[in-house]
Image 1 (cartoon, one colour):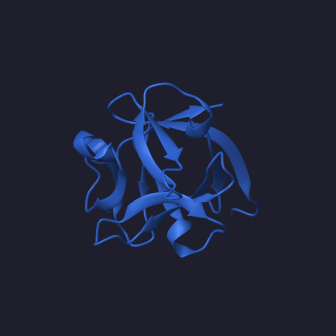
Image 2: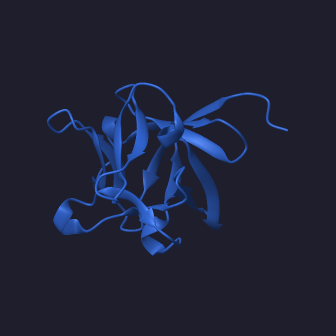
Image 3: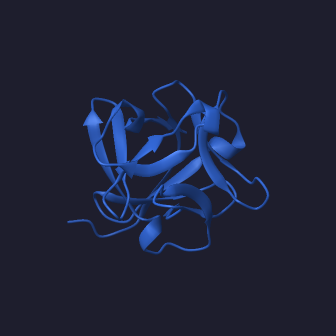
Length: 137
């Protein structure tokens, strides 16, 4: 039984050996998988809400959410509190690799390089671009 919140600072590394980052581009707080180095904006607090459900808090003090953007479910890091779209199910998919499933049942993946490697919660199954390594800080 899970009876408390647990928080751990981490970085998420993509299948392309890049880090997930929260960028404040024109107030949009878009979440991308494009950072080649681990700096401040690549650090997230992984907040366990239950044994399997988590929220991610950015270095800016905001929460990551999967927001419906023309059915692409882009990830943004601008939410001020944890509600439904800020909750993700964390699953170990391979040894040392985890996947995040959004509250609407889609897997988070890294999008195309031409678009800046956006994180999107639109995959119906966990493909290689849905795998992340946790780097504990």
